Length: 180
Image (tube, rainbow, N blue to C red; front, top):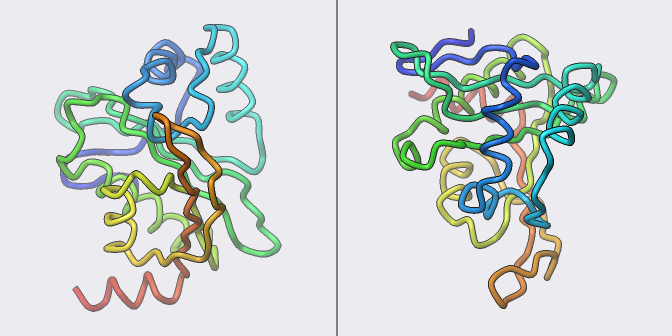
């Protein structure tokens, strides 16, 4: 379930703190995911990971190359609502040199499959900055549809940008998978 052609997902652990801290403080990586672009202390990253690991409404996974076990990024389901069968997903490829190589697509495919086929979620949603056109295109190819936008929510590089809210539903995702 958590293994693709080139990558696998493994549970995030406290041993991953140093790697995650490096990604979390990389301006180029965080430009696309962090609204405030704040820098974090190591202690803040430790506490963040600890909260993720202890939360009954979160499941976080390190994205790792199968052959070398090199960590590339992290993907998570957060705010899991088991009663209403929905969750928010996030993904960060922390190693910039692996961007645009399909690793994010493969990781997200594994996470969404898990969400719908094992957790039996009805809906998975996400938020993405409007200037992250590459990510929006990827999400649309995976079956996500725009549900709305928060207008002028992010001020970045001298301009206002929207936060785009997207979602994919279990039925649509599984039907799409049967077409391939």
